[in-house]
Length: 91
Image (cartoon, rainbow, N blue to C red; front, side, top):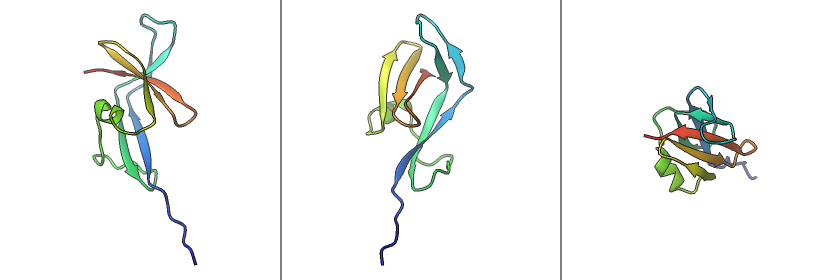
C-alpha cells in the first residue's frame, strides 16, 4: 500500500503595510518592507526558521524575477498566487 507524501514547497510571508508608490513611473506598485521564505511541507509560517534576505532569495532557485531596481526600491515579480508584482524598500 502506498501512502501519500507531502511535497516540500517554498512559502512566502510578506512584511509591511502595502502602501502604494508611483514615483517616476506610470505603474502603481504595492510597497513592502521585506519578505520571509521557508521551506516546508505545510503552509504554517514559523518565524525565525529559514529566514532570508532579498539578495539570498534572488540567488536561489525561487520563482522570483527582478522587474526594475533603483537606489531606493527593487521591484520583483513572484510566480505564485497568479503572479504578483511587488516593490520593496532597499537598505
